[in-house]
Amino acid sequence: MAHDEFSLIRQWTSRSDGQEGDGLTVGLGDDAAVFSPSPEMEIVACCDAMVETVHFLKETMRPSDIGYKAVTSNVSDVAAMGGYARYALVSIAVAPHWTPEECQGIYDGIYAACDMYGVKVIGGDTVSAPDALHLSVTVLGEVEKGRPIRRSHARAGQAVFVTGHVGSSAAGLHVLLQDRQEQQSVTEWSGRWAKLIAAHQRPVAQVKAGRLLLESGVCGALNDVSDGLASELWEIAEASSVSICVDAALIPIEEEARACALQFGKDPVEWAFYGGEDYQLVGTIEASEVDAVRERFAAAGILFSVIGAVEAEQTAAPKLSLRTGESRTALPKAGYNHFKRRE
Ligand SMILES: Nc1ncnc2c1ncn2[C@@H]1O[C@H](COP(=O)(O)OP(=O)(O)O)[C@@H](O)[C@H]1O
Ligand SMILES: Cc1ncc(C[n+]2csc(CCOP(=O)(O)OP(=O)(O)O)c2C)c(N)n1
Ligand SMILES: [Mg+2]
Ligand SMILES: [Mg+2]
Ligand SMILES: [Mg+2]
Image (cartoon, rainbow, N blue to C red; front, side, top):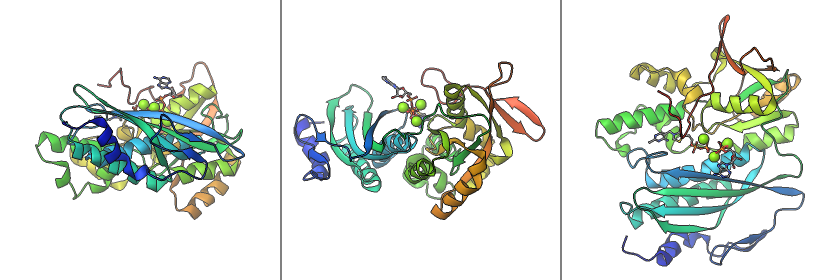
């Protein structure tokens, strides 16, 4: 890119001009940003990166999708603590095969997601990279003091639930990668699998669900689904020293994902447990409060499915098991893992 980084930064981030106010005393443009959290709240901080070839290819994501999803995955982590996001810091390392226009597209997606979640971009970093684009986003959010929802707070007897559908993003990715093999372009896919492709490219963080769960006061543990349902449930079970049993028939899998799996000879339950990137919330609630929580979710128009139960830890029994009819099988601790790939 034959540009200097200073003019590029100005170009990409001009939408952050004049953003001071409402707790932000120094916005983007100085050495660092300065802000105060709202009274009665504490700060929630997280950071997720996206790397070309690992998290996306030019064939699977438009530039704006990359920016949008990088913000979403962070807002989703804040939602999984019961909080809401307020500020974002964006670090981008640009490889030579990315044009300034494509990078502008990434920022269009970043700002689109930030507008949607009420987040201000207050800083970042711009550097060059030799061979792949890296995008790292840090989000700072807020949650009521002393009330963040922890993944270690699942208790035996609680019900296990998940919001929305799981497995759709993996289905969309499968279609996109199939498409790539057939040398088509992402933009040509608007037909049959559009919903699944959108689930992969433009996931939605479940902020409202997280807030609702915090306000209910009956949520035990909570995680967001980035690596797959199995991995997230394992994390909850390990952190809480409990066992979890889920029922295969109760896993909310979209009709389109089932049809897609059928077409490509894949297993939709496998996508749900081991696919990842759904950014739904999975957690536990007091069993006696299931109906009340279900009603709150219905009123908010959010899909809420009870999928299993928390059990006391038993050394001989598996941490995570799947009930299919009368039989019960152990679910391995697998899912997306950066250094260990599933066959
Ligand atoms: N390189 C790192 N340095 C410091 N902390 C990290 C690093 N990578 C991950 N973490 C922390 O480890 C925990 C688990 O990370 P991760 O599995 O990526 O969570 P998630 O799936 O929710 O994004 C988080 O608290 C995260 O902030
Ligand atoms: C080209 C391509 N191949 C594979 C994937 C699948 N994939 C990449 S990373 C990932 C897991 C989520 O990313 P991670 O960095 O682990 O996020 P975190 O768990 O930290 O939120 C998945 C399912 C993808 N999105 N794109
Ligand atoms: Mg992470
Ligand atoms: Mg998470
Ligand atoms: Mg991960």
